Length: 124
Image (cartoon, rainbow, N blue to C red; front, side, top):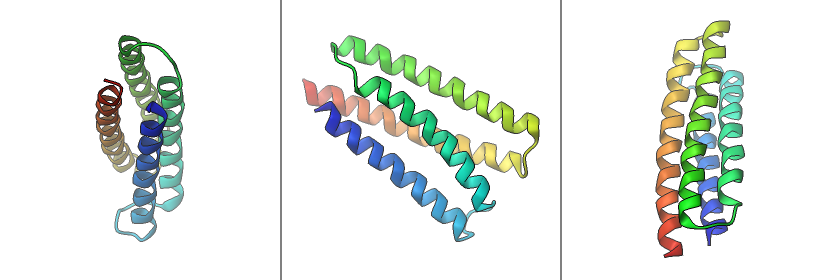
């Protein structure tokens, strides 16, 4: 059952990134498409690698929740490290991209938490 929920989560995340890229491409949101593709690609990589770790392991609910909490901390540290690199290198419009990526990351963490609760309820 967790694989079905993980698939739903990943398709939802891909949809969010696709919508974000389309909004930047059509100039509804500010910024260049190349930079949006770069930022979203790194953020997507952080999310995907973490979810492979959480959803593909067997074990009880306690271990699942512990892995999920560790995943959230590691994802957040990875995100902050990436944002520190963007700020230090002073990439073009870095303030806009840091805020934009922060909002996108917070939205995905919120959705990830919802899917965790769904996953635990489905098993019970």
